[in-house]
Length: 281
View 1: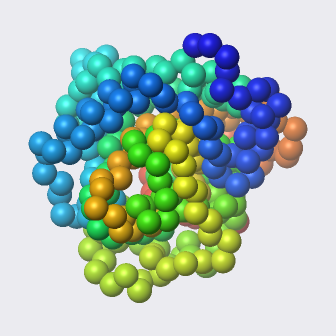
View 2 (view 1 turned 90 degrees about the horizontal axis):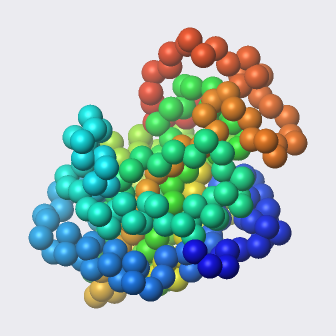
């Protein structure tokens, strides 16, 4: 690693954006030889593996693990393993960005998800990826579950760029109550693109980026992707990281701490759900 991608001052601005809006972008984190290797690997994967039709809106949903994950019980969730994934998840520049952003107790899942829209693929529905809405961590004003992702090509409004509704990780909107659970059978079975899951909404923004830019999202923020209206594949490589395990408060946090976190019961258990509940006000 050479000079950091962002200065400490820029990192504070990016952290504020992530906390308040639910996302941030750091240009140029993945470059050169490794970007080419990840691009070649994902192209090969997509050329040789059939995509389940239920993933037509996502484009694909291949889980690829690090070599070190291979000998663990969690290996079962992966369809294959590659040392390229080790290099991508261990990327020093990305870890330095996360350090500058103030991520603490960071733990990667040690796998990537390859989400690729083929040519002329439909849009991805609005959704959020939080799976633990019953847990007090869902009320956290700071992120606890984030995805770090890289696109293999430049993204535009034409080829399926990311869309975000800023602030929806912290504030309930009418759309939350109209969406079926993310990536579940109901939303995957939709055939009518006039459904609310595919509509435009006030405040929604497009987030076009360059190949190799690092995009960081809070798991709770509502996001989608435009259709790919081009003849070229548009591939996204995504990795999940956990940070600030509840009830840990960031060392830099100066705001209020929700009572449900302050009074967190470490012995309690919570049923997983993708449906936002009382913790999303």
